[in-house]
Image (tube, rainbow, N blue to C red; front, side, top):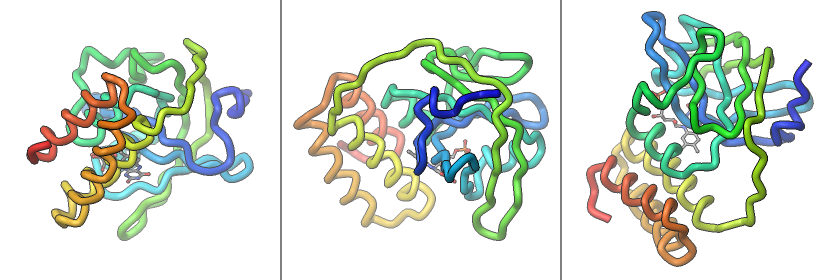
Length: 191
Ligand SMILES: Cc1cc2nc3c(=O)[nH]c(=O)nc-3n(C[C@H](O)[C@H](O)[C@H](O)COP(=O)(O)O)c2cc1C
């Protein structure tokens, strides 16, 4: 039995990178909100490769990641195949400090589907302490707006990205600034 608290997954929504496997065996990674209500764990998933994969092969791994570049890259592009490792045939991210493997029941909705997760195994590779840095959170917010910009093409999201980009420039560690540069590159817009 896995103690989800041990992984830092508490009540509310934790932003994780969900890895899944396509019916023809191709691994995929994308940021998803992992909701916890009591002991219930689930994600609300819009049309995406992650959803297609879960519907055809109902397993997922929540990779607990603190690298802003991995969030941006997996949100807006693909993670290179060599960055995955396979645990009993299922992909997780090599760089993840921890992961939880789930069985999944996916209820398909018209617009949004709900994936309910049951943990089957997990691993904590590295425990770290993290002083709060506003720029990491700003990259994550910018990445959420960037995925909306890419799918909805509404210019209002560029303004939101710009707002968070200023925080990254002011408070950012090197990796956060690199993530922000990659984000602008992947949405095809100058920084
Ligand atoms: C921090 C973060 C959280 C996200 N959470 C969700 C989510 O809960 N559900 C969802 O459908 N998309 C979510 N997204 C958007 C997906 O990651 C994005 O649409 C991605 O391109 C899907 O990739 P895929 O087609 O490879 O599955 C999130 C994005 C970010 C940056």
